[in-house]
Length: 313
Image 1: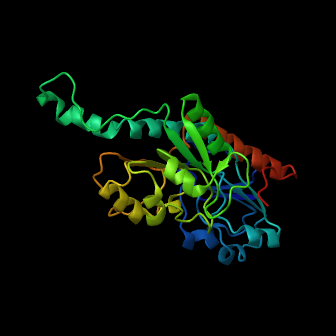
Image 2: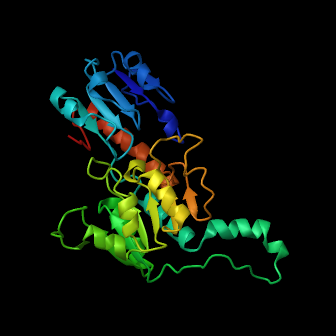
Image 3: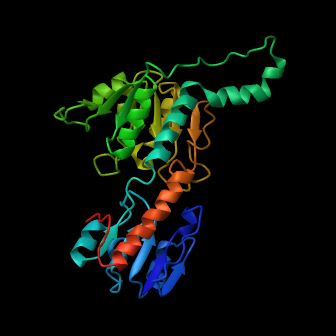
């Protein structure tokens, strides 16, 4: 039995080889052109973000099980695996607490202009005539309106935390859809009403670049955006332009369209005082990491025990 881990370097701790595993190929990273040689005769593969598409999968006759070290599974050709009978498991819900708390931390940082005041304390405070130094306005979180796109586990957890802070919460309906589901608000109305918009929907053809020049123009002037889901939900050029023009008051991005980003990425190099970019680590609190490792081990044990757990097919 051969198990291959393709991008173990995405985890801050090492996986432990199961007792029932005969051959464990543990790779920190794997490029797409290495896949065929690396996965030769492998029955099980563990991947986080390395894509497994039809062109590769059809040349791997021994492959029987894909364990995705994440909740999202857009990196795998689900339709082909269904045709071939390749089982797929993910790890649902492992990062709910970590990401939702990260969203609330970003929300406070944006509304309170932490970036600007931290910089000012180091560069301007010593020359101030007063004990305090006023820069951009400090906005309250209580009574602000939070728009949430996506009502899965994380979106729901963010809503509960936000309501506990006294925020008004709106769940946005899918773009272009009439409101038929209880507890939802029309997408355009959500954009117009929210002080902060946070994205928690999967990346699909319908949601790709859901935030773009047109939708940004519909948002309340000075509104803020948080994205901990998938980078391509946002058109980065359009967001950069909205930040530069002042149309959008700030953004906290834990994901970008290309990861790692190019050094000349427009958002990375943008000197905006209320732009926060973190390297895709909202999921990685101690609890999130522990939950993920347990989930991977649970899925592997399920497959080897003859019953696939957390199947996505």
